[in-house]
Image (tube, rainbow, N blue to C red; front, side):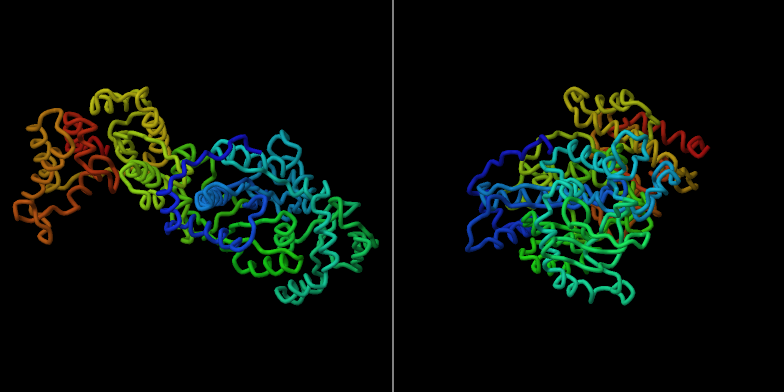
Length: 552
């Protein structure tokens, strides 16, 4: 179990009233759980569950499920004024057989002899530090959830099956075997129907998880009879971890056994939701409330897969951005499919700090729609961020800085009194910016030489900057740049109007600046960048571009 407990909520009448009206999706989901018990006494606790299949290393989608479930849990706590105990169980289906070898293990041949054995029996291919492949992957998941500070309990299917915690529900599956088969068989193809059983016995001879038909199911004795891999007939108790359930019956049976009230899962489970619910009801339970979210895609638009290892890993995201930016990405539009690759990181970081800055100025209705309320369980920190992540990236690009001290030289001159000691959150972002630039921006930078019109525009811009005081702010620099552009026909936008009534400025002017000076297609507001980088440094950068040194 994680040692971190839920942050105490400061409940006020204004907060509770706003929560009851909030349209934010976690509150919408939490209201489903409230309605679930209308007219009934509350149970001893409300159980939220999140499932994990440890067939491969945990990916960001796994984290997203726990993060989103936590957001709904916190919303529920507000709606019930924190009077109903809640618990979040992260359940690992680690007794599942290893049906194929993941692509991202060090030595695939090492695992071949263990195909179809339970994941908690397959040896750890990552140096043997853990008792099994399943234990390794479970540890990787728990490490991050603990680092992030989630309040959860971890549960292992292997432990639950072998300890007898599922014995009662397994006997009930045997008793209601025909009802479950009546639910399952219409969903299967003809060939699969001929051999299907909700029970998957573990071969007492080979240790493999067997997909074999049942010859007999004795509900009174609580046993199943089948032919083992060598053709010999075997009878096993359904209890004590000698069998496990197929994944669809397992969903419904687990809900009944544990009393789950809320579980979310990806869209790929959507077509099976009615099957899960029907099995749950057939076993005498009430299906939990559901939330079906869209899948994450890699940069090629393909579904992220644990076994393929495509898309971003948790550790990769956290190498280049704070955890809060990842939580923001999970909060936003959960029912919309989103690509999850390195290019999305800078925007997520920028938006997180924008939402954080807006929070103190908002009323309760706006706050409950602000992602940072949900990310921080109702207690967002107060953070002063005088420089944005986008500006930091462009500062690294322009200065070719590779250590934090160089960047802090620019920052401290631009914002006197700001230092790593006074602004540790900004210092953290400086490190992220350097790493992200080195690995993703720098390799893709393409400088181009200015044509004659562009060169003249850059000379005029440099001259105009030279008339400004060295401590000119971003607004003054931006206005100076706009004045230069308005005098050049190529950059006049007659569909816009300037403050003096003349033509406005085309975005092509600033695109040209970033293409020529930074080697990128776009960047933050030019005035803000030049103020941070310094007017003299910006003019020197323009001079280098005009001499062709940047292209070279």
